[in-house]
Structure formats: structure tokens, C-alpha cells
Length: 176
Image 1: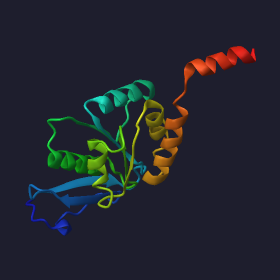
Image 2: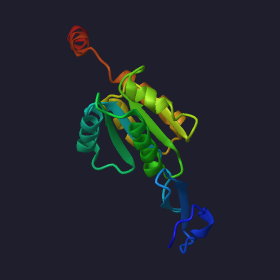
Image 3: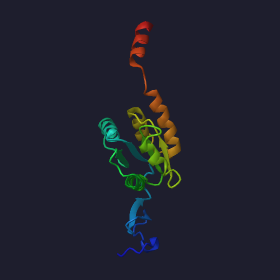
């Protein structure tokens, strides 16, 4: 079927499916089928310096099992800014099943965060910084929430996951 940039030429033959599409830079229509009976979960995108996000995702999946609807995007000194923003946009499209997407970055003010923030007004997304494993585990367990609510829950889990372990142990010993 030729692509002429007209979304109306694409019709779903499945009554349980929705077609969505967006014109991409290569002048091709990227079409995605979302089943109406598919649960709407928030997409998860981890954008970090180097492969930190990939390692966090691997650790989370070791604990929880394989997770769909998520991507990790590494950013380093060789990364092209425009290409990275396009990659993040594509990840949003690929992971969003109708509930939006949450972008988790490593550090406020860093390039991964700044590039992600540049997309705030263009899609149903939220950006949260300071990603850690407790935060990511909470996100995967609460993906039914919309991005803004999910970000607030992730923040709570991330902060609660930061503990001075020696203090906790010493307090337990002192309490008997």
C-alpha cells in the first residue's frame, strides 16, 4: 500500500484494534496497532549518561522478569543531539499504549534530562530525574498510573530507597 501521508487511507480490519500514525522525517508513515483490549500502561524510557540506564533496566528485569514497553537510551560525548532527541521521540511512540510515557533520567541539569525536557510539550510524558533501582521497580509495578502520578510514586520510592545502611543496623542493635 503506498504511503501518501494521509492517515485516512489506513483502515483497521480488526474491530478490536486502533491504528495510530505519525509522519516521520523520512516521509514514511509509521503505523502502530494498539489493541483496544490491550491494557493501557505507561511507557518507560530511561535516558542516562553512558549505559547506566541499560544496566538498571537489566537489574530490574533480573528481579521482576522481562518488561515490555520500555527502552533505555544511552547518551555520551559522541551522541548527536538531534539524533538523540529523535531516538527519544521514537521510544515514546513505541512504548506509549495510550497512557503516555515516563522518562527517567540520571541527573537534573545533565544532557539526558535536558534533551528529554525538550519534549515535554510534544507528547503525554513526564520526566523524573535521579533514577535508581527502587524507583524503577516501583515504576514497573505501577504502570497503570498516568505519567505525572507515576512520577510522584517513583519519587517516593526513589527517596525511600536511599538509606545509610550502617545507621539502620546500629539503630537495630541499640534497640535490641
